Image 1 (tube, rainbow over the protein chains, first blue to last red):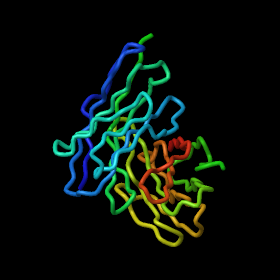
Image 2: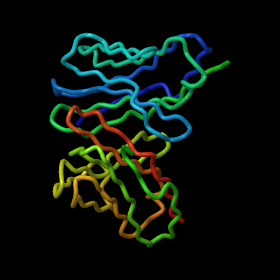
Image 3: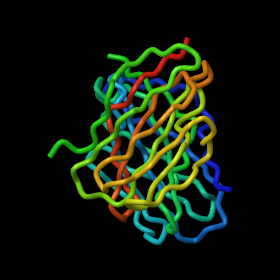
Image 4: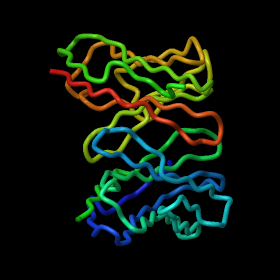
Length: 114
Length: 111
């Protein structure tokens, strides 16, 4: 069975600074996908970034980038130039190439200090 | 294009009552799923469907039923609500590629 671990329940960052959210996963599969979802107080689940395991290049979406270390099974999210609107819960998630069933970590609450 | 819609947004039930949470998508996605979110637990998969007429169980299926008669709709039924089913419920859909798009969620309270 696949597992996703987010060991930090909470983090805080100063506005305009950079923060990194950690995620590790465990799987025996070779074909899989990794995601970071953002959940603001509105409760909506918003896709932040996606990484295909077969791609060596780290995914980037504007101020959001990942550090994907396949051998270490690590998938961290870096948020640059943090903004007040980045304050939310962030979930790391995983699914294999065989299906679309997502396995989620427990999430991390990110606060942004003005 | 409304994406994934869920109704109702909020619901309060008494123990033993039944109800159906509605989910619809207008993106012609073949894959649909239901998750529940509990504090400190992340989201957990309840049931999923890979196409009309095909459903299967996820991680926490007990107490829930689903059916998929059309591509667009994937309702979740609680047959006899229990306090342990108090949660936030999310419906999601995807078309290959494994990227899932979520509905706005339903907050359910069972007294």
